[in-house]
Image 1 (spheres, rainbow, N blue to C red):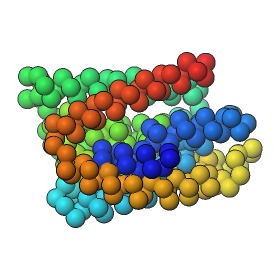
Image 2: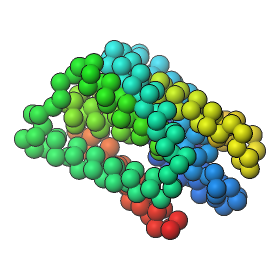
Image 3: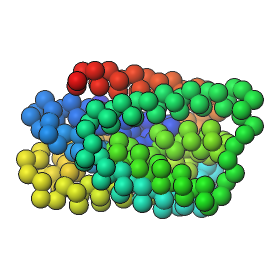
Length: 261
């Protein structure tokens, strides 16, 4: 069920589904007695699932006209650098900080997207340039490494609100950039987890192969349905759905924070 929901969200909103997979895996691993490394394994495995999911979504999007490859490549290159930084930080800071920071960011982006779309602020945007895309890529990569997301849940609203892209175009760029960002994140967690004891069986570094296979097999078919649904949805309705999703996820993560503490 987790894989199906994550895959549908990946195709619909141009995100990797990590915001769904990470909490589910964290709770499961904690219940199984692997709480010491539960957050790192959840984040790493989520990134490993996002990689093929984003690749399928990119191929599907390529059949239309929603992908701009040059911004996606630049964002992806910066994202690789950022993902290494974020992954390293994530194995040091407490999980409570992860949850609180991520929830706050989701709420901020939801409010910001609404303000930018429905007010006079909509006329002010950052210009599209290589420098802007590199900086955004690094920042998004750090978030991806910290939270186990492909970067789309951050990148899609950033491109829509700060750069002023059409949401359909930003989704296509996000999916493509996620292929690069997720690759850097997965490699970082494999290296960081090498030699760590007491991990869940079938793990390579912090990446659990068993969970990854189960989630990939269920999420990839759902990506296609999400892409088709998104292409048939108007920009205004798609943006409203995305804002609602960010708020729901933020509340869910805050609830988890109170539960864990």
